[in-house]
Length: 162
Image (cartoon, rainbow, N blue to C red):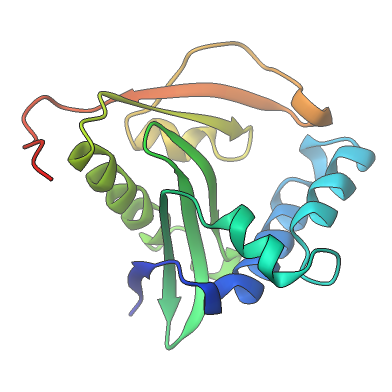
């Protein structure tokens, strides 16, 4: 059984390695070789000092999923934008990504956010659609990667306290 918790400094190296491995495995065909390598180099703990990497990963909203202390997923971003969502391939289709997005949405609602945006890989579009996101543009190629801009309206029924 997995748990969701706030991202902390001690999670930095293992979270970054998860991001590298998942990105390489599932986005191989969606990026140019140069784009793929640039992304990997930008978050690999062997390439970026841990303090700098922590500052990069530690967004206003950042949660990790763990299974017996092993990091198996991450969602992070600003209140109105998911910048990163990665789930270890062995844990996909088990509710980890869904739960991470639910935690993100809950945190965004508490900040009074009305819409959440995400730049989705082609691989992740079906997941985001199932979570209520809709494509807002056609296929884009930022940094040599195939991406779709997507958006989800948050319900007005949430309480905006805090």
